[in-house]
Structure formats: structure tokens, C-alpha cells
Length: 151
Figure 1: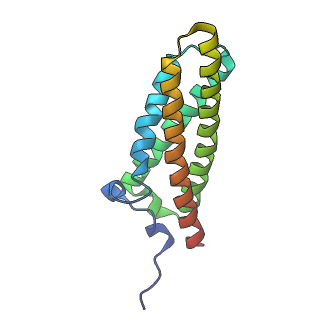
Figure 2 (figure 1 turned 180 degrees about the vertical axis):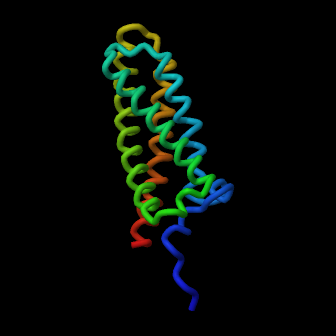
């Protein structure tokens, strides 16, 4: 019988993250999260505080996901066994926050359509925000399963 895998070997390092699931979802999270960030900055939202929340979530998740990608590429997760828990907790939180962004933007699209009829960018933001939510949710589920199996 083979020895059980160590906790730190469950998250791949280096370029293996581009061939393993759910880490490959990081690419979609960055690409579509960046699109959400860019499009939110160019939309007309009737409530500036909500646009601030949308920007905060999209920029924060983009930065933290970029940092995780960099750390996984360099193999920093091999130094501590808490990376599995951190990965799961972060992706769960990001999925919840992005869901709030997607719902808020969808509601703002409806309001903006009634006010100005300029809504195509808002629709794109809504679609991409729901797509990023899907990426983060799938990543969160598989990260939580990995966390549960490692404990």
C-alpha cells in the first residue's frame, strides 16, 4: 500500500497548475475578472457607492488571484500545510463576493435601462460577473473537497 500524499503536495506547483483541475480555472478567473474590472470602470451606474463595491470586489479578487497564481508558480505552498485551507476559504469568499457583484450589476442594468437606455456594457458586465462567479464557485467546491480530504 502506498503512503498517503502529504498535505502540501495536493496543490500542484510550477507549470503543473496549468494542467490540473481546479487550478486551471485561475486563468478564467483572471481573464474574465479583468474584463469585469475594466467594464465596471466604464459603466454608468446610478449609485456611485455600488460602483465602488463592484470595483473593490473585482480589483481585490483580481489582485489576490494573481498573487495566488504567482505563489503557486513559485511553489511557495509547499512550505506550509495551511495553503489548502487558505485556497478553499479564499475561493468560497470570492464566489460569494462575485455573486453579490453579479446580482448588483444585473439589477443596475435594469435600472440603467429605464433611465438612459445605455445598457450594453452593463449587460456584458453582468454576463462576465456571473461567469466569474461560476469559475470561483467550481474552484471553491473542489478546493473545499480537497481541504476536507486532507484533514
